Image (cartoon, rainbow, N blue to C red; front, top):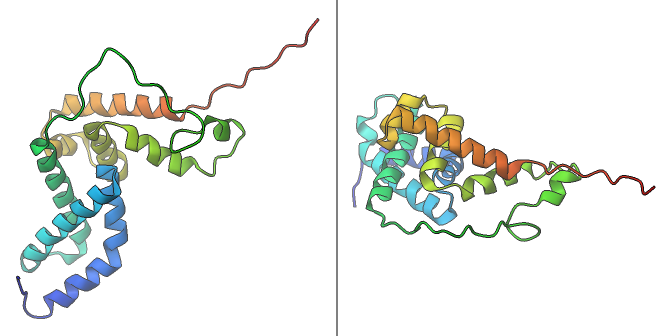
Length: 184
């Protein structure tokens, strides 16, 4: 067990209590899975704890932890084996009840679930697309910063974000209601 000196352990504990839920939300945005988010945040907090005495600006701790989460997540991607394989057949779209997209709520004007629907749509994106969108629009990183963080080119960032946004738009588009014409 590593023990820090000079009240650092208490400072770290206070930081985690104060910012833990916001950081967990950011981790969830990166991973898309609650248990993966918890693991990612824990790994990032361990790195932060070990570097606590070397971090000069404690006002920028959130940035340090988020950067650690991005780097750790990228390392995990690179170690992971390919779990999805291309196929000639497209999966059936998820409609109606359950965990999927609920078009009938959107058509009737119930936008109260919109934030949850955006989260669900993000969850359905492939890992790299989700990470690019989260870094761009949630973390407000520039395309060169995202390229460096993900280890890809700026052009790949642009195309990945563009394709991801197109998928999100398609997932969240309200189907037009058809007008029934009167029978003559």
